[in-house]
Amino acid sequence: TVNGKYMMYWGEKFMNIATSDDLLNWSPTLDEKGELKRVLTPRLHYFDSELTECGPPAIITDKGILVMYNGKNLPGASGDTNYTANTYAAGQALFHLKDPSKLIGRLDKPFFVPTEPFEKSGQYPAGTVFVEGLVFFKKKWFLYYGCADSRVAVAVYDPNKRMP
Image 1: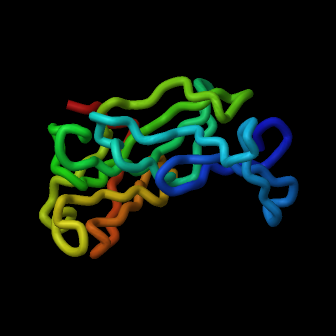
Image 2: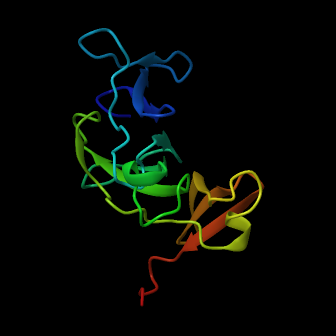
C-alpha cells in the first residue's frame, strides 16, 4: 500500500493512478479540472513519443516507485530516429514514495528493445517487446513480454552476475 491505500498505475496512451481501500473498488486520480490525472505522457523525439502504457505492477524500492512501461515510437522527425518507426520498446520511470504522481525521473533510452527475429515478425514487424509480467524467483528476475503480438517470451536477469 501507498499512503494507506492500494494503488495501481494504469492507462493507455498516457499513465494514470487509481486507488482502492479493498482491491475491488477503484477510484482514478483526477486533476483540478476533474479529468484523469496524467502522471506519465509521451515525449516528442523519444522512443515513447506516441504512447506510454503500463507494464508489470510497480515495484516499491528505497529510492521510489519503479514503473516499467511500454513506449511506442512515432514515425519521422517527431519520434526517436535511433529506433524504427512504430517500434514498441520498454522504459522505466521512478515516482516519489509519498506522492506517487510525482515523477522523479525516467530513462531517455529504452532498457529493452526488439532485437530478435521473433520480436520483429507478426502483427508489428517494426519490432515489439511489450513488457507485462515481472517475477522474482530463485534470486532472479523474470520479465515476461509480448513479441510483435505473435508470441510470449521471458527475459531473465540474474542480479548476482556482473554485466560485461
